[in-house]
Length: 127
Image (cartoon, rainbow, N blue to C red; front, side, top):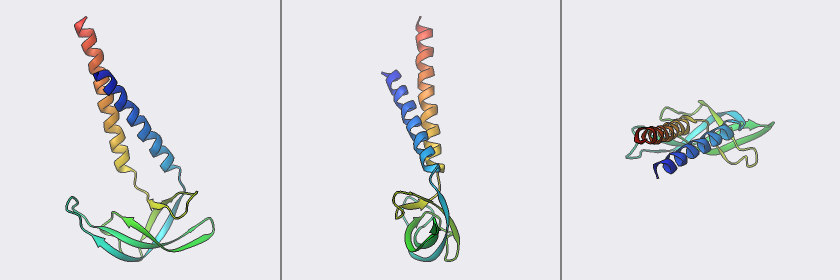
């Protein structure tokens, strides 16, 4: 049973790494924050998140006043932000920050390989 859990964790980490690779291959553009529309303070976060309007150019086409959700509490009007664009749907864009998925994939992989090593150790020990 633990062996299947270990294999599942390793598979989940590989899927996360594949997703990270696909997201990192998306084209990135540099956008300028036009204005901060709204600030949200959540009970679980120390910093505030902001809803902003952005202006950027993608494939020589200008996109103005596009809304985005930023996790940065220091963002203000006039700042430049790096965004990743989904080329199939240019209305879908998000700030380029892959730190959390990378950390999650590493933790799942280490836990999976740790359980797998534990299974192999117990099999050797019980023989």
